[in-house]
Length: 134
Image (cartoon, rainbow, N blue to C red):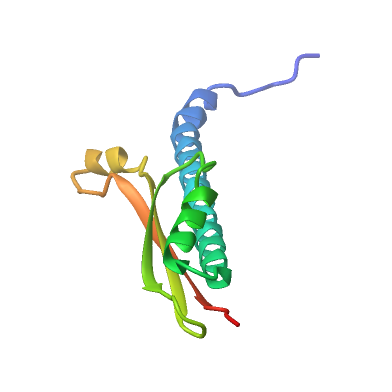
């Protein structure tokens, strides 16, 4: 006994769903890269500010060096470390900002539809600590 099966619509369904699935996968990949870069920047800013807050001398240089050291093993993104508040005396504030950038894979797709889009996605993380001292 032969079962009746309609196979005429299989190619049409694949032609409609495949581009949608590919766009969703590209979006998930891009967003996961942005999330990883954001977490890496946040951890580096926290680490740098904490090391700078416990330093007994030259807190600003220690904070920046520690943040850069934390970013040495980052595999995704480009990072820039800035000091917003250098600390230096007990009770003063140390602020470390880490800015990140990743490639925007949707820029080419959006440009295809006649709109402009940035070629990178970016963000920043700022961490504040109070300078310790005794």
